[in-house]
Picture (cartoon, rainbow, N blue to C red):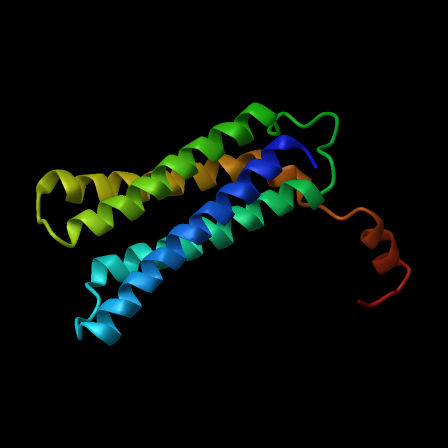
Length: 151
């Protein structure tokens, strides 16, 4: 496994830790203090687990498992995938932190931070899939399908 997929997967595990910690905080507040979670903290929890853990692990495993890029592929560049990693990591972390901070403040700067971070996540995914697009193709399965095999 190359270093970039490992980076995605290990970062996903770190976001899992953040999501679990937020979930424990929300659970303790609800069950022991009788305070229901603020919607923005619940959103941060969902983003840590969904966008942070699940998405990062999927993106890392996809890089590891998908076929190598064709030799004439102009889209795939390892440095582009690394750029998408940094855009996604920073954006996801800022989104989680911004939403937790927003639960206690209505400051315009925090609202703007959450929006910019959310757009950053979209940009990061766009860069990732632009680079990976030509790697999403059949190899041996195309020949087996043509031979009539169903799976």
